[in-house]
Image 1 (spheres, rainbow, N blue to C red):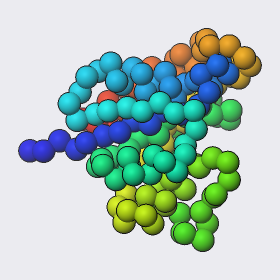
Image 2 (tube, one colour; image 1 turned 90 degrees about the vertical axis):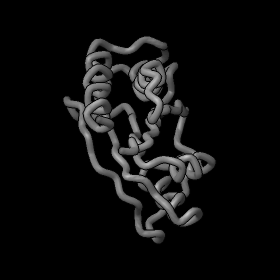
Image 3 (tube, rainbow, N blue to C red; image 1 turned 45 degrees about the horizontal axis):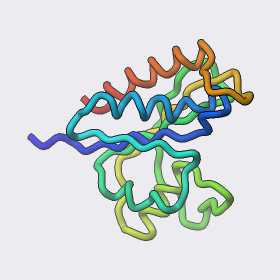
Image 4 (cartoon, rainbow, N blue to C red; image 1 turned 45 degrees about the vertical axis):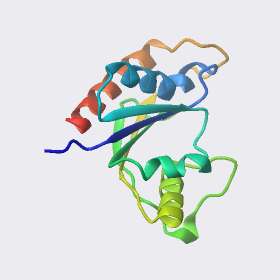
Length: 145
């Protein structure tokens, strides 16, 4: 039986405290050394990574959230092309839409939002964010197994 290939894409600013949650999760996933799973850390989602989405069966986006008190797991779908966000950054839906439009392929996609409370300058995560990272990693293991 073939295993699904998975890309964990963590994004955020690692020098803005809890905004570095996505990068921390991506780094931990990379340390697992699973043959079918790779990770990527980004400051923000950019059009250049749309092609990377077409190379995997499943993509899991991980980002910090300024709202909410629990780690949330949400299915993500491409937008209608008329709704595409072409601002200074892309959100997961827009990136999926770009992959679909340019490459005619999109993977199964999920977004894990991890609550953060400290977004000031600094490289350390708050205790709430650290707990959220642990929960996010558990959710990723559930998704890939």
